[in-house]
Length: 150
Image (cartoon, rainbow, N blue to C red):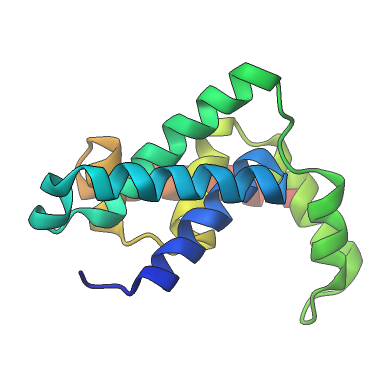
């Protein structure tokens, strides 16, 4: 396993928290994803742990969203962004609002690539596309984000 389990847990938890916006629910989904991974040894033996975890977490988040109509993170993330050092709060809020105008597919792609720092190769395999196609999608999503910001 290339990453330790704490790092994997943090990445999957952040992804689930982004998708669902609820800390307890994100923890439950993350734990469920890990339980499923430990039950299925095939992915660990092939070295596809991160890909398996993200795919499982994504499906579990979708199921949970459908089940209880959970809303994605909005105000809580805005408050968190406003509290982080480095950028002015108005700029962070503008970035968040521009990010929310992107299609869900673009938001998820950017969150996985930059928020969770999923390597391009792993992300391409998760989505079933080539690395080149993934780079094009990321570039397009970033272009749309820049357009929204200007």
